[in-house]
Image: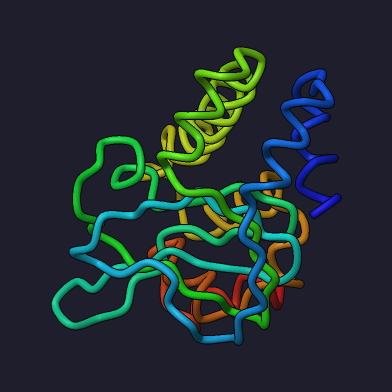
Length: 186
């Protein structure tokens, strides 16, 4: 719980009253590797903080599992499209390690935003950060070679090879695992 409060405090000055309300509402779960916490076709109602473990978002295309993104520890994540637009998710989110998740329901966040205006700033900063990271990663991405894609990923997420398996990384980059192995071997 403290890791999430400390994470919020990196972005805003959190009042004691807001901190107490957040602590009172938090849901903390220990979940095993392989569990899908978000499924395609369901509206995602929770914003998660990954206190321990890793997660990945993926979807199926022509029956093939395609990794879209990998989330390391101390990251806020959800099915962004589903969560913010209140629409069914088009992706899955799976834990790739045993994990400890801290989360709040969408309605709880809305109530916190109404009661504690400083939390609006936190919400906005998180959205801005996620948008900037995704934009930076994918800007020009489709014009890069496989090697350049891997180098971009390593620059953006230096610890990625320590937290994700090579199959998921290759899928995320849109390259074969064999190609990724050759690139890493050089």
